[in-house]
Picture 1 (cartoon, rainbow, N blue to C red):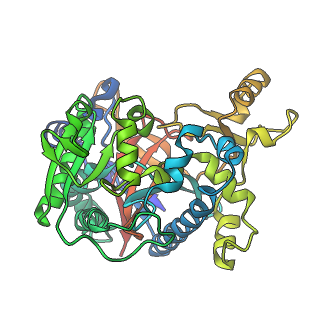
Picture 2 (picture 1 turned 135 degrees about the vertical axis):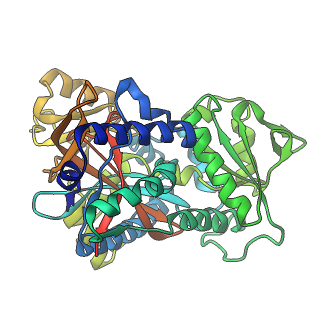
Length: 439
């Protein structure tokens, strides 16, 4: 694994490079509504490319699909666990019944993202699973397509896009899940879909313009495949006579880029759960997929890795590529946490993630008291070089960054990668760069 930072430095003058970064971010903000491109004056879209060898790409593909099987198997057991076990995993007691009784989807999630790091020994290590509402769609399609011709020229024909048909892969994954309507109460999903094409609604908080742009991208992709779609805010989501409406249009299926924890505060939430449980409304990203996103589930998988639930290959995958992960409540107060990362169950974008090497004893005890944290063995991530504009936007700075490679699972198959580079713990200031492969 390496980056194109040095070839870019040789190919572009400082002024030209900085101008390219500025233009790429302006286009991302104006054309793709990625307003993070101007976050705190820092460019979100990096002008660079992370290059994987074919072996690294192939291993990542296999690991992504295997971990998807592992998480699917784990969730099949977890949803039937006792209330005390579900509580230890951070699941609210009032949502236990709907979790257990919602109809099974075709896949655990139509579009999920496993975030990996390549360690200094050359092994992929799994950091987390974004199974509910993964981001990065506009970046890996629109932004990458715009940047690719420049990177191809600099690389001299030695690299290729990782998945040049990723836009079609995204659309097909959502389409197949939208058409999949399993029967209520069955243990194994049925393969027959509905006789009529569903109207698919996309629920979003309208004030979050980047999220709005992402679901609009999804809606347009499904419309091209012949499905009727509608995009609306939570204020446009209503129940009338047992039928849900979005922007006044009846919907048969729903994908929400609206977190469950926020939806649960809305008056319509109970009716939503009942409609899903009864099979009246198809939920493309359901409660099972939401729970799978919890870091506590990764601790459960690690703790059950040697059980017959998992095949020999799956056990080897867990042992070799999932860092040891534990619930804090299962560890003694005297546990040596200095070589671990402390993560909140549902923390997002590096929030509530602490490096044990810098965590005080008081901080450790506070995390234990909060209870909703895991300790995951720290990964020694292999760094790469990255080129960014200096503060004056006329010079360049060559830095060392740590890639977080988000490997997509789409419709049960590997779909491509969404890479961000930044500090050792990926946070909201990390930059997007396209992921490429050697040829």
